[in-house]
Structures are given as C-alpha cells and as structure tokens.
Length: 136
Picture 1 (cartoon, rainbow, N blue to C red):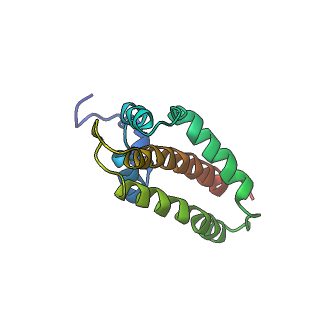
Picture 2: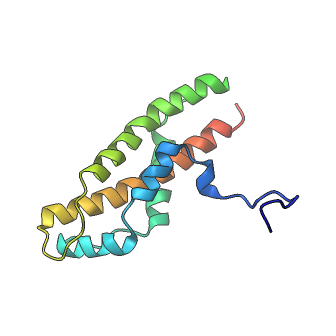
C-alpha cells in the first residue's frame, strides 16, 4: 500500500497512546536487559510483559473508586488515579542506569524495577481506557 493509497493505513497501537505514555514505552528496557539485570541483582526473573500488564490492569480495576457517569468527570477521576503510576514509572526510568556486566546489584535492580513499572502502567492504562469507554 503506497502513501497515496485510497485505503486507510492499518491501525498502529502505539499511535493511540498519549505522547508521554508512548515515550515511556519506548524507553522501557527490553526483556533481555531485564533478565540480565535480574541475574546481576540476584533476583528471580520478572514475569513476561503481558503477565505484568494483566496484573496492572486487574489491580487498577480494583483500586479505582466508583466513576461518575459524565465522560468528562469520569476522565478526570481516571486521570487522577493513573497519573501517579505514570509519574512513578517515569521516575524509575530516569533513575535507571545503563546495563553493564559489572554493575552492582542495587543498580541492576533499578533496571528490573523500571521494566516492571512500565508494563504494570501499560496494563493500568488499558484498564483506565476500558473504564472511560464503558457505558455509564
């Protein structure tokens, strides 16, 4: 399909994210880096990305208070609940060092923490959007 095709482009999930959240996802360490960091930190390997995201989704659904019917008010409540998660994941990414084979365990643990926080936040974001779009 060329750039002037009469057909719409296929949907790209990353295009649906807010730019701040898209940057968070792009800065997330890879699973390979998280596994190496877990080994260096003497931690068990982190769960798969989808498992972490599912856990974040489920917990966010449990922690969100009852939502008002109007979408604008509902969006405000959900944003207030989600923003701390986004900021925490951003903070973890900023504190994350570059992976090296001779890093101390505490530094390697920060890589694992960032990996888990980003994927947990991804699941929570999916839950927030589902709640926002649900019928009142």
